[in-house]
Length: 355
Image 1 (cartoon, rainbow, N blue to C red):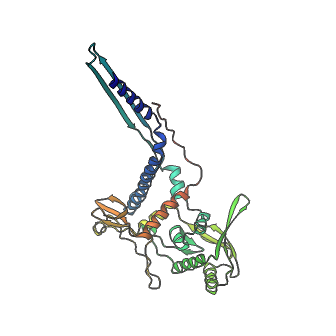
Image 2: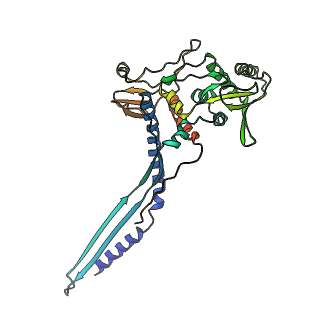
Image 3: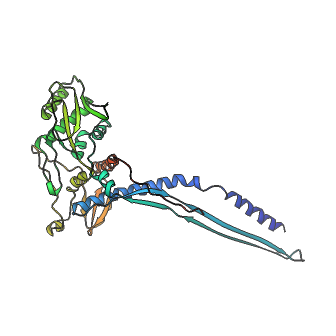
């Protein structure tokens, strides 16, 4: 009898200790795991679509719209004891059953139609580019990736349909702008003008002769007022006067097409006319222009890759030791969030059953 009481007391304590909620304990684990999984899949999706575009395939993007995790824990405990007339003869029994269910609901939304046009085909707004510069991103890298033309000076484009090298003065211009940016002599100004927000580039007064010389060369190359300090920025190819800077920006799709032209592909694929040769930018004043992102290919899966995807019996990857390529690829992913313009698409409705 005493032994049965002890068993029942222990079981009651176990049941009471298991009544604490499981929801709070899953937050830190689920948030980290889902963040890592979504991040990795997002990077692989971007690289996969870059490779597809390189081979002439159509890109396909899927957004993870929502993630809902459901947990269910159920259990049953049965306990009993039988006693005979003989006090020395007794029997007890204990039975337990339980189950644990993890039922995540993940919703995917394809980027098609109007959303595709907004996210991938809309040019990056010039104010967004200036904001990136203000945030500390190097102007030479920002302009090489996102700008097609500035006051008539054209960047290179690697897309096969209209591939061309940059104007010789383009790389010299962005280097001088980078030198001015590093000195802190270039700033931005945003102000409301009627219903639109006007954006200006301000070249601050600096006593450094080298910076002043670089600023004068930038004004001359862009056809700006030699004594001007503030210049309005507009989207376009031609400025209306020497107080304006016209920037023709790229869409995210153009950015991906341009970067994909630098992807290294197997020689056999080029020989078989499956893909065009890798674009090589023309040297400027005997200085070799390196690609922004180095994406390699190999028949075997790489052992030390930042990100890799299989495609056409090959593996395409970014070396984890290539810090610049990793940073630029992450910057490309960040730019993806800047092209969200206009009305949001219809949010999917998810119905979660109650257990």
